[in-house]
Length: 160
View 1: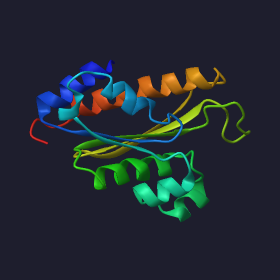
View 2: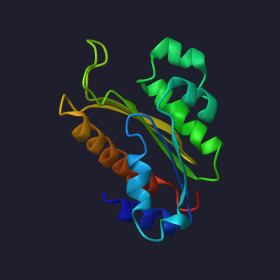
View 3: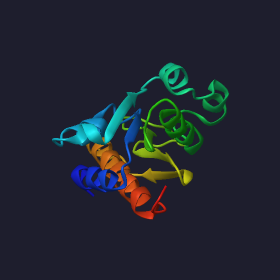
View 4: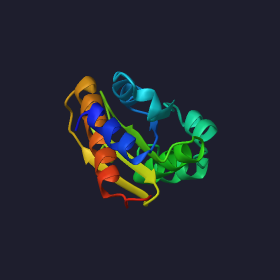
C-alpha cells in the first residue's frame, strides 16, 4: 500500500490521520507528507522515541511501560489512543519496536508492535521482521503501518 493510496482513501472518507512513532522516528509521517496535498489529510505526527516522550506527549501510563516494556502491544495501543486523543485526527497509527542492532531473547531485533485507533476502536499487531538491519526493519515497519491504515480505512463503517 502506498502513502498516496492511504491519503486518497482517508480523503474519500473525510478522515484525518495522526502518527505516533518510536522506532520509525518520523519516517511514516515523512512518507505521508512526501505526497503533495497531504495537508488536508495528515493532521500531525508525534515522534516519541524515549519513554518520557511517550508519557509526556501521548499520555502513556508509565506503569504500562514498566509492566510490559515500551516494545509491546499494550504500549502500541496506548500510543495510538494518545495520538488520537491529542489531535483532530479520526485515525491514528503507532509504531514501537527494536530496529537494531541488538535486542534480547524476549524482544528480538526486528520486532515491531503496531497500534491503530479510530472510530472502530483499537487494534494491535506485532511482527517479527527479523534481523534485517536497522534501515530495512524501519522501512518494513513504515510499509506495514501504511497497510494497517489502509485496512482500517477500508473496513470502517461508511459513516464512521
